[in-house]
Image (cartoon, rainbow, N blue to C red; front, side):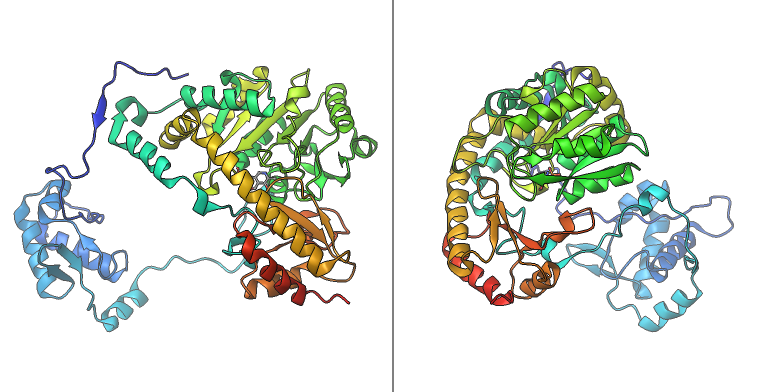
Length: 512
Ligand SMILES: Cc1ncc(COP(=O)(O)O)c(C=O)c1O
C-alpha cells in the first residue's frame, strides 16, 4: 500500500501565472530527421509536414508548433525550421494569423488532397470475418438504442441535476486543484485513497448497516467496474451465476464476457426466489442481486429470503454480489439495511455507487470486500487500471465529511418523493387499473407492465420521437418469455410536467 507522503510539499497553482503562454502550442508531427541524408534538413522538415497534410494526418485549421518548440523537439537549429515554414507558407500549406500562430491552411486545394489520398497507403480491412475472442462475441454489438441517451421525461438514470450543489462542489474542486499535493500526482493505492475510504466506511456502517472498515473498501469507477473485478476474482468460464429475472442487463454483460453460464431466477413479491434457484442450480458460484430495490421491478427482498440466500451461500460455498445502487431513496419507510450487514460468514461482496446520489459521469463507486479476498481484489484491480484517479476522491471525501452529501440526499429525497407521487397519481388518472404499477417505494424509477400483445419496444421507439424516454421492460429478461412494459424514470422531470407527459404516453398505447 502506498502511504501518504507528507514529506512532499504542496504546490499552489495560479492559472494566470505570468510565465504561462497565452497562445496554445500545437502538437508536433512525427518527422524523422536523418542527419546522414544528403537531403538538407529544411527539405526533410518541409516534406514531413507536406506528407502529413496530404495524408490527412494534419487537418485544415490545425495548430502548428512554433518554430522554436519544433526546433527543440527535433534537436536542430531554428534556421532549417524557419526555412521549411517559409516555404510551406509560400506554397499555401500553412497560413499564419497574427497573434495566434501558424495553422494548416483552410484553403488546401481539394484536387491536391484527392490525388494524394488515392496514392496514399490505405489501411485495408479484408472482407472475411477477422478473429476476435469468443468471450467478446458473447456480447451483442453495442447499439445506441433511442431511449438510452435521450434527454427529458422518464429517462432512467437521469436525476434532478439542477438541484446539485454546484457552488459547494466547485469550491471543493477548486480547493483541490489550486493546492496540489505533489504526492497526489504520483501512483497511488489500488484500493483508493485511505482518507476517502475512511469516510465511505463510516457512511456505510451508519446509513446502510454494512459491517466494514476502511481496509475492506475499494474505490472503483462505478458499480460496473466493481462487478468486473468481482467476476474476475470469483468466477471461471463455465461457472454458473444466478441472476435476477428480470434483472440489470449491464450486470448480465459482465458475467457473459467472463464466460459464465447465466441462470435466470424469477423475482416475485419477495425478491429473488431462492428456493427456485436451489432447485434449478444449487451449485451456482455467485448470486448477483439488488435486494434493497430490485432492478427493474422495485421489490425489496424479504427478511426470510435474505436469510435463505445467506444460508445457501454458506452451504454451497458460493458468493453473493449485493448491488446496492439507489437505496438512499425510500419514500414511505426508512431505508432497508444491507444484506451484507446480516451476513455472518463473509459471503457477501457489497457494491455501491455515487451515480444515483450525485451524478453518473462522476464514475465513482465502491466495493466492500470480505477481508480474506482483499488481496485478490487488489491484484486484479492493479492489473486492470492500476488505481483510481486522485482528484474526485479527494473532492468527495470533503463533500461527504463536510455534510454536503447527507444534505443533498435529504433534499433530493423530498424532490423525488414529490415526483414519484405525481407520476403514480397521473398513471392512475390516465390508466386506472389497465396498467400494473410496480416498485413505487423507492429509487428514481418505477415499472409498469402492459397487457399481453402490446410490444414495449415499438412504443418506446415512438415515444422517443415525442421526446419521452421511457425504457422497454422486455430487454431486462434473459429467458424466453419477457413481460412487456416500461421502466419510467422520474428523477429528472419536474412534478408539474409529469401529468402532460403521462397523457402523451397514454395516447401511444393502444388500450380500450
Ligand atoms: C442495478 C444497477 N446497478 C448499478 C447502477 C449504477 O452503475 P454505475 O455505478 O456503474 O454507474 C445502476 C444504474 O445506473 C443500476 O440500475
